[in-house]
Length: 197
View 1: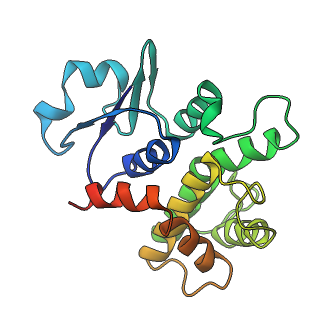
View 2: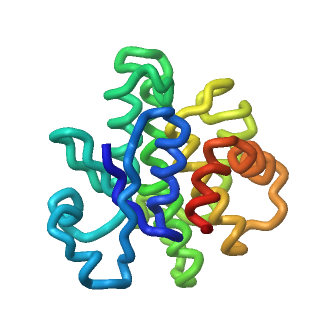
């Protein structure tokens, strides 16, 4: 298994996922600011748009964080990173795995770009609605699926960390402790160590 990865990018979240998984993988470092690295044919075969993260696992080629999370959880059930098809928590898992790409990131862009909220036009509603929904869910339990950490927490936890890091939220009494739980995990710390090296 190969993870195409670049420091200080969204690839961190899949490095964290793979560290949580316990699976053997090779991290293929790229510099996306360098055209030679970005246009490497092996990388572009996995990620036609030249974006990271990108995962190669045998014949599987995946270049979307949400899809990679679902793939790892399904393909490697022994990792316990997501409930199997048919499990009562499967729908919630899928909702929260896709929440970062489909709701949090567009809402962050709305906030940073100072766009007018258009709750009837934007699929994510508004930045404030995104935060209220996230807070409401995180207030229920330690992790998005209750007591079980999952790949959904990898994506949402990373997004929450960047909401705080970019100054888009302050000292939030619900999101703050969730970020602390995520960043205290040994797998987060291992991924952070090489991402910041």
